[in-house]
Image 1: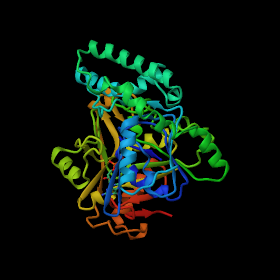
Image 2: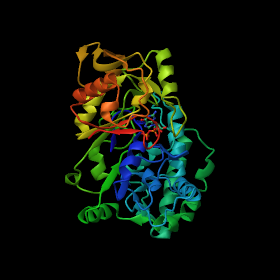
Image 3: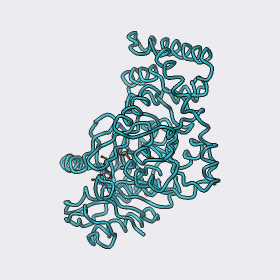
Length: 419
Ligand code: GDP
């Protein structure tokens, strides 16, 4: 399951639904910058690191090698879930190959973003610097904790390296970085207790006929390679990353579900070609409660971007779509879909590699009549208003991908399954 836009597509709810029919649920990239929001009954769970599959009793939830794991916060989340009555004993596993995100990564992230002329709009969680250390072959992996002395040496090295870099950036107040060696070693045994070879576990699970769900965070337009670089996250969010980030071969993937909102949003900086005019932006943000789960930041809203959606379907090889938050558009008299972009060089219908050209491009919009009726109680495709069905048909046509599910509300059961 992959986000098809700029993240926040409502993947948490879709994972939650898919988790029911899965035995193993694994995350393959990202870190505590994710933040799925899942509503179960009257309760709301915001999970940043632990896969939301934990909300289903008995499911095995794994953090693949492609994630960067913040151990302190991970255990806070773990303990909070247990305190709210979710038993996690034997249910959570962490890849031995996953890299640790340490307090100095967070400080570096904030210091850099503060100094930078071109702000990416990061969540300030240290994700970028942690992946930099990974690519720079300086990272500390879960497996490196096996030997306590070795672990201490690596952590001290990391801290000292970060201290020097922070000094260059003019930061002398190191806060929790000072104690990071001790605080990390304090959870060492607990973390090792969860450590596993995730790829092997999934491989054996598949051999034994188990259903495995690989859960993506963020979205396609935030992919390090395929997104709107440099306004992207530091990992491979697209479907190819699901194999490498969990440690299985791509031939094991037989279904790729793209999750897309019925409109578009973007948090953080960077272009949003189908952006709504201010009044409408405010309206959709309120209707859709578009504020970041991790940071509380307001998200910019836009019409459904058909150019991005088609690109996304191609880059990921989507075999099906889940279109979420259709209900948010219920009251609008007319709805638009971006079908191409008008740029200085002329009209283009393929998502461009040049992010700068996106900044100055304007979406060419196709108008569709709204349905102006509530969809919240609809559970069957044929019961959706005719104009809503026409809207979904247009999305299917543009993406050349069948729609498998449609979200019509925040609750678990507010979903239309398309046979
Ligand atoms: P994620 O990171 O992709 O999981 O996205 P978020 O956690 O930011 O989820 C988006 C929000 O949309 C959450 O508050 C969900 O409860 C909500 N949501 C998900 N699906 C739907 C839907 O179909 N309709 C409405 N109205 N809200 C939804």
